[in-house]
Length: 158
Image 1 (cartoon, one colour):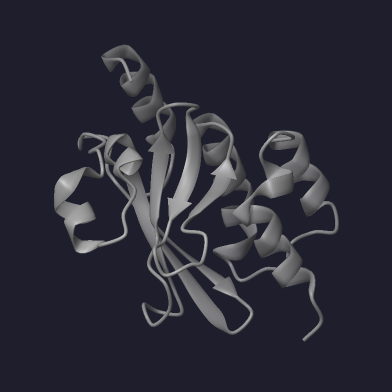
Image 2: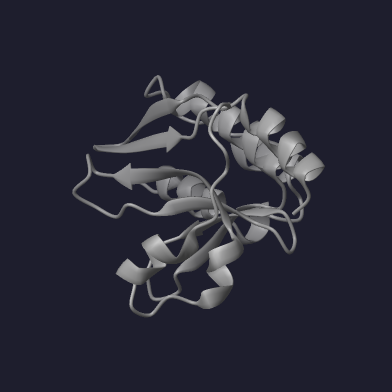
């Protein structure tokens, strides 16, 4: 990833909040993003060393943040930029499939996050048109994304 490309990504990601807490039914989802002044570090050997089954391809991925579910009692995946296609992915070795997609680009991630945050940070329900809106933001990534699963979870009864 070139220095110019990294700067453009950092500019886009600078529009993300430093932290955000979303209320999902009876659980919390806490996000933390790196500040604009921090470099986007590659995952690197230090973190991968802790993960015995880590894929060496992940070493070049750039960490942009992380999140925790259920007040830290649940999973704690990393949020990363994948340099080969610029997608924003989650990485969680506690999952059967540790890599999952959020959005096809950083710009679409920022726009999707801002849209969802406008409701979920207030504990408000998503509008009926939420899925269509998210699909319009990222028609390539949304159908296979973690966001689609989140919307489906929030739509379930009870």
